[in-house]
Length: 187
Picture 1 (cartoon, rainbow, N blue to C red):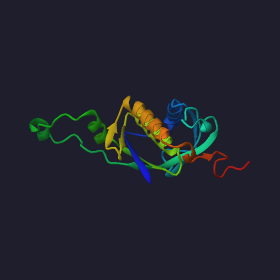
Picture 2 (picture 1 turned 90 degrees about the vertical axis):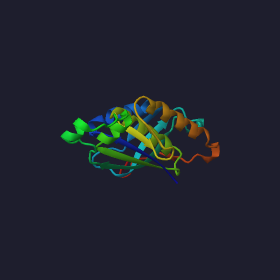
Picture 3 (picture 1 turned 120 degrees about the horizontal axis):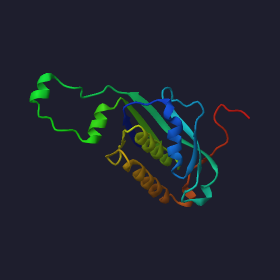
Picture 4 (picture 1 turned 30 degrees about the vertical axis):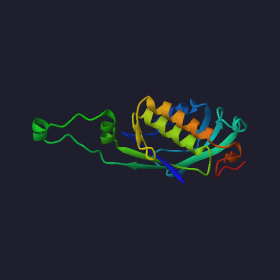
């Protein structure tokens, strides 16, 4: 089973990766993304090393874990260009809501596919998507719930859904992976 989120934004470049990770850390966790990660070239599973400090299952706090989610970036054509001279003069178009305007102007779509095979994928997917949308002034779409979020509501909502989800997991039902090393890394 998969939980899907998407983020639409104007542009995306690697210069914001440190700020993105810094924003994710504000969710009571330490996090590192796979070494050499680039928004421009990475596709597929995106691994993170995490240390959680606020997990409802306290036995999972303060240990190094590996988690992640499937990540795909797609460049999209900007819709709704300026229009013709006549539509500007005679057209009676209604002004767009802020979310609609951001979606129409988006140049990049990032898809987050979150699996239930790891209990912290939901946390990492939501926190990664929400902070990226916030930093890049984008829109996050929760495809399961049929909602779209932007601005300051992103962080509040992400925190609420993650903690609510984690509180529903029974102590013996947590599926986690201890961090040993990054793939391809030899000690």
